[in-house]
Image (cartoon, rainbow, N blue to C red; front, side, top):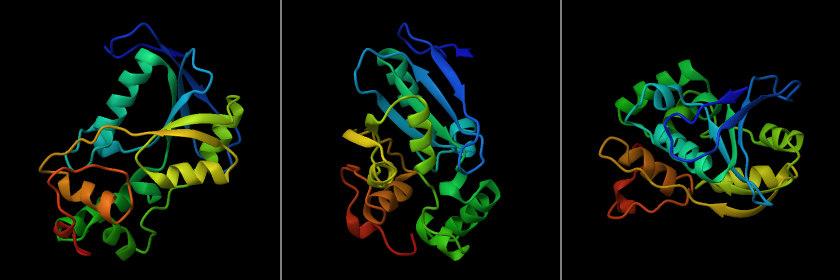
Length: 201
């Protein structure tokens, strides 16, 4: 299946690839743009219905997805879209976590109060998808070091980590601070000071 460029500049179209028999039994997909690079640029994007589709202001997921598609439409690459809503806890549980966040918890504490890990996502399935596409050596578009280590543990060689842009707004600053200071993401938040982040949000 060939997808249009969604009004993104550049000459490339993407091929949508489905997979059969992935180890977690879910329906993950890949969008593959042709590239002349020997080592493809890869983005692992976990599904975020609220951000990707409904343009929620409380996260940066939709902006990162749009940036990735624009970049890869222009230069080529592989987008792995994983069905791991809410850092792997599912849509309904994520909405419950939102309620806890509205009461003052941050994203880490909201997940753990619901009985889940801070981040329940897995990347071995992404490694399987890349292997099926014929790639064991990649460049990874991410600010999250867990994605790098997860892929490498699953047998994928990450030659380089390429950072995404940081989309800061008053609505998502607390969320980004939590990613930076509690989850170790490689983010530059400018004037956002570490002391503005607490264990409760």
